[in-house]
Image (cartoon, rainbow, N blue to C red):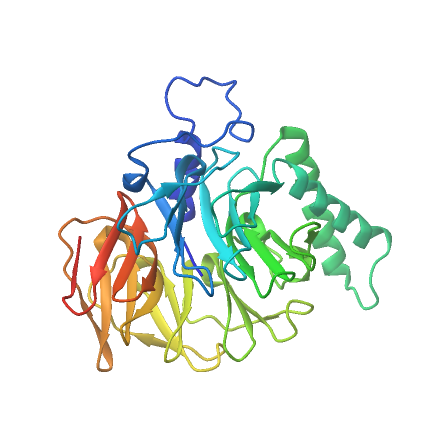
Length: 362
């Protein structure tokens, strides 16, 4: 996966995504994404290659989803029913995909990303949170501590206030293990799961050891089968039973963590150039990198591992360390993916491509 720019940037983009001229009555959840000839140069926050395909799919501002079937030589704009900022994509196979974003939006595609339908939007996810918390308080599970009950009560009060105010959640990442089992997560400790391809979702944020409801920024399923979540203020959580139970991890950093990736080892990316490596996801070691730009994610291409971030930061692993790849424009990169002999990056200014053998971006 993938993932993302800093939450503050996402919130800012959401507030601006309606664009000029719409006024206060514009409803992003009812307006299809505007068709634009400049969509490839707009803000894009995630890019994926669906498993078993050679299609590139990217998503970002105003509900924009783009796809290419010719290795990026040309791009088509998908049919998208909303105009919200989309933050993340997830595919279980070549056909089935999901996109998440602002205003509690979860979209689904059955044709590899060409067309999308709404699965959840608006306050529906907040209602799921309310119902889950009320159920816990009405029928507390065996072993629930007084502290947990207090935490759930406070959370319920916040959720009820959000419903009254019409405050819709921000989703920041999505992961599908297969065509049925998936997770969506985001701001203020929001975590949802489905076991039927998104037809129904359940709120499970209360399962996490996250009493302060810190933002959840990224989720990864490692090759060992361990689920990892990284978030605000150094939050690190794992599950070895596909999300039924979760445990906290001693964090190597107290600042926000934005990306998780796996190559020769697990990598964790964060604020101010913080990068960590781990074999098992529990014990993390710091890795020195040039510069202090915030790091958002990583991707493997042509036998190399790249880390990308703000201010045009693009690093490649070299020996035991990382060196900078020079890019002609200092764009901020949110996510990347490899396809054949190219590394595709998205972020501010849209799409960029890198030839790993040449070591330059354009």
